[in-house]
Structure formats: C-alpha cells, structure tokens
Image 1 (cartoon, rainbow, N blue to C red):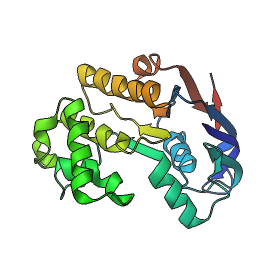
Image 2 (image 1 turned 120 degrees about the horizontal axis):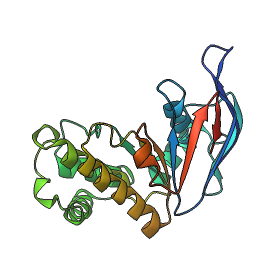
Image 3 (image 1 turned 180 degrees about the vertical axis):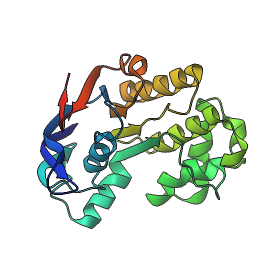
Image 4 (image 1 turned 90 degrees about the vertical axis):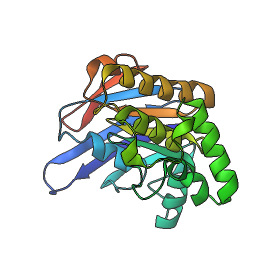
Length: 218
C-alpha cells in the first residue's frame, strides 16, 4: 500500500535526518513509529505524503509514485489518498465541526449539502453527532480529536498518517482514538502510520518501529 525505499533527507547537508530509510506498510496494517523528539518522525510523515521532498529515494502509494509526481499531481494524491490526524486536531477555527469534517469532500468536488450529510453521518458514527454546529473551541479535547479523525477518514483514504494523535488526551480518550484508527484500517483496507511517544499505545499496533540514526528498526 505504501512503499518507501532509500529515503535520504538532510536539512544542513551534513547530518542526515533520514539515512537510506525504507518502509513498507500493507493494506489493513497499523504501524507505529517511536523515537525521541527531533529524531525525524514528523519529517518522515511529511516525506511520505509529498509535503517534503527527500534528497534521494522513492515513495509509492497504492502503486502511484509520490516522489516522481509533479507538484500538482502530488497535491491531488494527497487530497485523494491521504488522511491526516495531528496532536491537537488542527481543525479550522473559523468553521463549525460539521464544516471541518466535510472539508475533504468539498475539496474533492462534493456539493455542500451532500458533503455535510456525509459529515453528519460520520459524526453520528463516532458518537458526537450533536456537536456538528459547534465551533472547535467549544468542545473537549477528546471530542475535538474524534472530529479530527472523522475529517481524516471521511473520504476513505488509502493511507492515514497520524502524528502524535493522542499526545494531548487522557488514557480513555487515547484508547478511543487508537480503536478508531485500527477499525478504519481493518474495515477499509487502509494503511495507517502512527507516530507516538507512548510505547504502551504503540504496542497495541501491528508493528512497532524505532527511528534511530536515520533508519527504522523493529
């Protein structure tokens, strides 16, 4: 589903953040990546989705080249095939929860009414259907993260990238978030790559890889 081979990335031209790193994540697989702050975990996610161009190496998603694509094509691949979950939800503060969740569909050309109907269904499925007309600042951290997951999954992406999605949550909310990501992978066939500092959370995923010295190791 997602293949990265020989990724090299350096910000100073001397010390590589990624040093011939390779990664393969299959359909329905949830892989967690652990490691200390500053080691390059978020940079790896940015490379995988085409937001950051590696100095060398190749990346493919569902058989389509990310590193070999034009800027416009990378944007299209990102919109259609990737879902993103961040530590603090990162919802657009000026939009309601419902508008935030429907945003990926609107970017793909879905009409306003149909997009919000799908978003409401997604929120109902996560048990927060009554929050759709509220603003992001008016809900709890756990509710906000559920909404962020609804937004990330609403267009049924091929790959979900989650960067510390439970870092600001309590244990109960963290469990809910992980269960939602795993459930999506199993149900839709998506590949999920999860960056976390929480080893107990990582141990509940299919594989745990540690990023050290620019490379991944089990």
